Structure formats: C-alpha cells, structure tokens
Image (cartoon, rainbow, N blue to C red; front, side, top):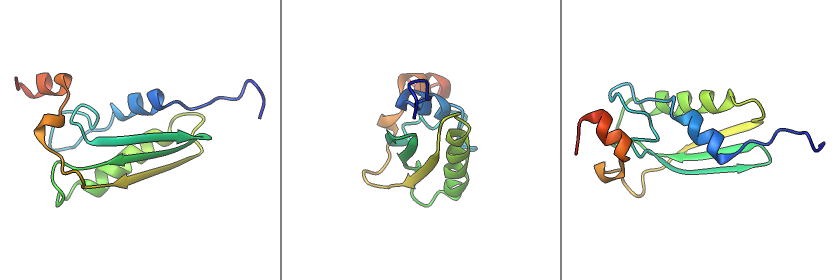
Amino acid sequence: MSDTATVVTKEEVMEALHDVFDPEIPVNVVDLGLIYGCDVEDNNVTVEMTLTFAGCGMGPYIAQQAEWRIAEIEAVEDVNVEMVFDPPWNPDLITEEGKLQLGLD
C-alpha cells in the first residue's frame, strides 16, 4: 500500500448512509437513529443498525440499500451490515434534523 492509497473514514460512511431511507418514513436512517455503530478497518466497513420495530418487513430492503450505498464509496473493500435489536429503537434516537423533517418538536 502506498502513501497515496485512499482510506475510507467513518465520516464518509455516515455521510453515505444519509442517502438511505426507510421507504415508509421520509427520513434517512442516520437521522432516524437507526445506525447503532460504524467501524472501518483496512477499508472494510461494518455497520450495526436497527429498525423502528423488529418485525419491520422492510428490514432486508433497508439493510441491502445501506450495503449498496456504502459499497459505492471508492476505496471500500468489504461491507457487512448487521441488524441488531438491542437496545430496541425508540423515537428519542431521532436526531434534531430528523425531528424537523418529521414535523416533530
């Protein structure tokens, strides 16, 4: 690996995830508070995310969209999106930006 090699950052991954939406809610997964963790190591990305409720039928779709969007980042070599349900999601996890988009607060 040379000094000019591109390195993926957590910030790039989180920015990319702003393009992923729950099709039933017009707010991205970051501002909805669905991203519980993001780890980047040697251009391999692991994201832990949840859903607004565990039985959400759109879960596989949303996870696939997240995986595809992260894979579009130039230097990403591998992507792993893990669904987790502990702790359970709650509306307190929505960011201020998300609340504005939803007309809350």
